Amino acid sequence: MAEGWGVIGCDPHKSTVTIAAVDGTGADLSVESFPNDSAGFERILAWLDGLGITVIRIGVEGSSTWGRHLARSE
Image 1 (cartoon, rainbow, N blue to C red):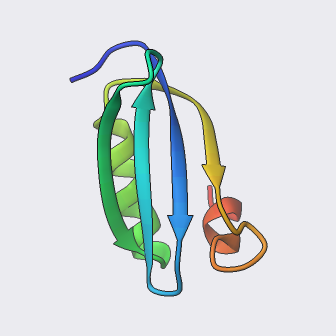
Image 2 (tube, rainbow, N blue to C red):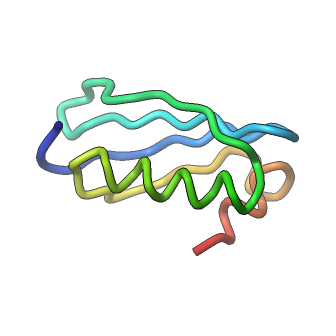
């Protein structure tokens, strides 16, 4: 498990969201795909919690199209 901080990048599509986590040194931590729906968003939150880092930024590609619901979720 990583320690420290990291950033997250999200690439949403109609049915799935692929998410990559990078730590503060730029090292890849993990890449996973989830359903692009509310159940998938819950799984994303659990995955983020399991990374062992403080997430300081999340970028969502297409936040006005397929990523809109993800970008607005809490």
